[in-house]
Image (cartoon, rainbow, N blue to C red; front, side, top):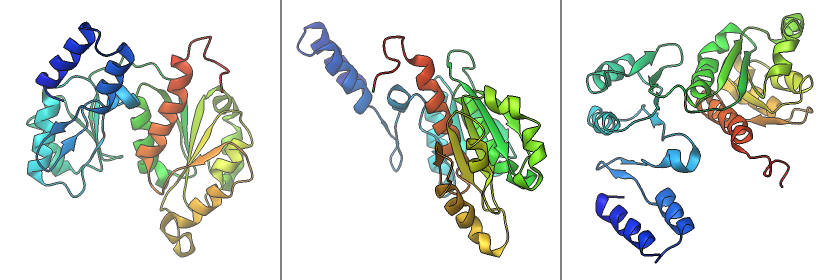
Length: 260
């Protein structure tokens, strides 16, 4: 949406040619920035609660430059996923406030740390090899306004490690359970808590794990109810889902709670 279209909509609203609801719907559905090969959704935060996340693999330098220039003119938080250090170095020349998080391979603009109010998210991993994917999920949820705690290397091969943190599990409003190998951790966690559990399979494991397909199937077939599963190594999707789940609870008014 450009300025002319926006002015036209405002004039129609002022002249009562359209309703407030129609105006809001138009603002939600129309705006994007045409950057040539990139059509960047500039109002995704209005519809979804967080801006479009930039997936870096496969993007040419010129495409990332155009996105960085656009983000330099905007306010608010943003994420660049699967970003290389080379891509970060280039983008940081345009975005001085861009930070690089090496473990999850994320570039982050964290300009607003206060206005977003979402819930408490706990990220647990089966092993330390799952940490890069877990950090991608944790940072995503954190940047979207969640209070995030981490509980790493508590897999079911040593169940006492998980049981020792039972109080932390009970305090969470959503739990992201990250595991490779057999992928049994989310089902165990879901059997111990009353909050939503997001199963995040990783590609960690030996041959029959099939690069994460094995733990993915385990999580999908969990006998414990309340487990939602995202794709293999999809930390972004898990963190986003946790933020949406807990954020809705925070924004509902008293009259909305309990509605179907």
